[in-house]
Image (cartoon, rainbow, N blue to C red):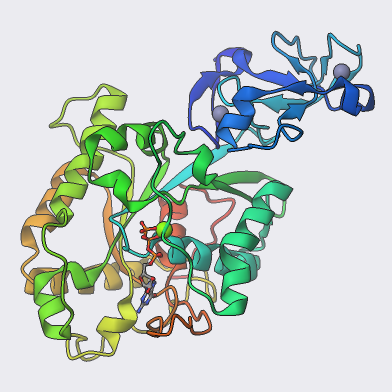
Length: 391
Ligand SMILES: Nc1nc2c(ncn2[C@@H]2O[C@H](COP(=O)(O)OP(=O)(O)OP(=O)(O)O)[C@@H](O)[C@H]2O)c(=O)[nH]1
Ligand SMILES: [Mg+2]
Ligand SMILES: [Zn+2]
Ligand SMILES: [Zn+2]
């Protein structure tokens, strides 16, 4: 395909465009002088910037003619810049242009925020087992990770409920995605974008429309479900459930509808974006009579020790599928398999224990949070990043 017609997905606003639509921002000193900055209302809106001074940024080259090295001439200062920006939201694009959206979706309170925080922490600490390095793509991403997750984990304070978008608020801007790069030994980098959406987005089709580009352009999806929402489980654990919440089936149907609408595919066609269905808060199951003898889910996974183990992923998925059936969730299992070509079940604990009534969050000791992500990388055949366990 002609290079300029290749498509790129913006990791911030999730819009897809051809490479020749990419704009540039000048990154040369002359255009960075404070009296030369220009108000960028589009960037400010997407990044939720309210301060007038922070809305002022260097000049944008709207119709750049980049050279082979990827530099374009600034039509204001005549210097060359290599800072590519998204034509839709004006965010800086990663230099690799190789972005993988892993969407994390689930109902309110399913455990998405803790999951993303714990997963990033695990990847940061352990991805070197794959001879890969982990880094946040931008300073902004590192800052967001620290404020949203790391500083809370250190202080043992709770992560706030993620804000649902207010009226006319740009949902992505109100809750910026976190971008990180995984770089292999040969210096091949892939940028991953994690968007920690508010759960409310998934049970209302009109709000769902906001997250539609994010979901439909995903390379892979992680659907998080709270097992204590299952009546059989909540009854057994003595947990009271809120009535009238949307069911697991509703969430799956909403997601499938959005993908079909966005990709103009028939409602009955099977979606081939791999779907990892992850049951959160598994520590609650582990510490209850619901946990089967000899359970493999409660053992730490070995994917960071011996490389990705398909056998372990299969064992976990089979055990959970069996439990779901015993907990009267057969309809959900068959719906998932009807709508999606590649489905795998996972169980994990992000915190490792319950948050105390006082609000004290115990030290984060995640179990199996990495499994769905590593399975998805393996499914996407990212062989340069994923090392397999010997059979
Ligand atoms: N026992 C246990 N509880 C957890 C775990 N992870 C999350 N929780 C509990 O679940 C609650 C919700 O978790 P969040 O990560 O904030 O859920 P969310 O899906 O981001 O929720 P919204 O932002 O409202 O959509 C937390 O306040 C915790 O009390 C876990 O690993 N184990
Ligand atoms: Mg949240
Ligand atoms: Zn964008
Ligand atoms: Zn310039």
